Image (cartoon, rainbow, N blue to C red; front, side, top):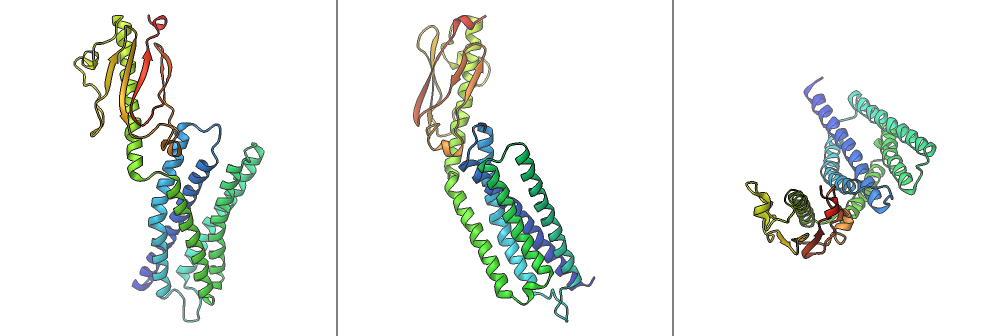
Length: 304
């Protein structure tokens, strides 16, 4: 293998790897959008959050690797990848057939998944859309490289460019759709800070009830509650957490939130957090934007 062939092989291999990554994460991105647009009654909060995370990951990967694929493919096409008799070089054919093998295996796997879904009664709209997504995306790539192996695009360069143009438009459309369905980065940060504050308040609430169980009284303040341990503090830029005993068995925990728990967050993750405690039963932790206080009552009958 001479230096030119080695360079050609590396460029073509890099192009195909970029293609595989683009297709894989385009499917991940599309699956995430389908999961958010067609929620299932069995979806947990974690599954909704996972869908949002997969959209962000898929968006980033496609945004990086699909342009990389286009650039590398352009470079490969500008270099010699055909022989003097206008046929593909051996290395090119090997890589094209490798692409056909991968695409064919994925298509067969998709067919198996559809059959399994039918047998297990999972042919919901969401499931069907996912199967169609895999079939269309992988099928389009498989068709292109099948024709490529036959030398079809060698004499139809403009048609090849049109095929790539349609694929690019479809990918850009999905990327723009993804931007609509996920919050902006600054919103995601604020949502996570809100959730962290709820987690802190849950921990404080648990310690208050444990303190009451041992002392038969509520603590005077959070310093008394934590003693030598560090009291949880609100994120930088947020007002301090506030605790107040309203009577001998009632208390409030307050924090300042950026969004409603069922407002902006509902598109990202419909956060409904519960604290399961043997002392106080189940509490809901829904909140509104701004300062919000959670009223809690010690269940004396549950104390021991």
